[in-house]
Every structure is written in structure tokens, then in C-alpha cells.
Length: 134
Image (cartoon, rainbow, N blue to C red; front, side, top):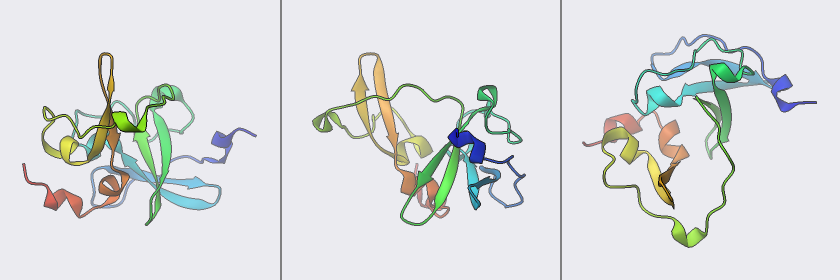
């Protein structure tokens, strides 16, 4: 059975956080959906918060487990699975500023740029926003 058959429709956001776009039911567990573009204060999201979660044109939900909770990150696109040597991991590029830079764990170099690695604990920490100094 496909794993997406366990996802139900996303419910609207009733919280005070603009980056929380709703809730989903994953195998009986209610999970908060975080719009990653809004959380990182990037441009207006291309995804729609009323997505049925299986239509690729509407975005993808990536379920993330941290030490404290399980959430879904709503993203526009899912690319290839890549492997990197552990010793190629670098600090975040200095050219990135603000929230994006602060929420990165680091980066891996690519031939035409970087693959940025998010720090899931910072993404999930609602108090982290007030700690950022630009």
C-alpha cells in the first residue's frame, strides 16, 4: 500500500503562527504542518495550504522526527537523493543572511552551488525567532 494513502486532508491553521498551515492525520497521529517558505521568511509560498497532500502541483509533505516532536514540512519540490563524503560538509555560506543563515546546519558543495542542510531543531523551535540577531 502506498505510504501517501495514510495521509488525510490538511486541516486549516488556527494557531497564531503564520508558518503553521494546518494539521494532517498520519496513521492516526495528528501532525502539525509547517510551511517551510514562510518559516524561513522566503518569498510567498507556491504551495497551497489546503492541499490534499498527494498532488505534486500542490507541494510535498516531508515528515521530520526530532527529539521533541513529529511534524511535516511543506515544500515545493523534492529532488534526487544524493550522497556526500562526511568530510565535505561545510559551515553555511557567508553570503546568506538573516533567518535562512541562522537555521542552517551547514552545506555540501555542488558543481553549481551548494546543497543547504537545515537544522531541524531550529526550524521546530518556536522561540528561535526571537533569538535571531541580524
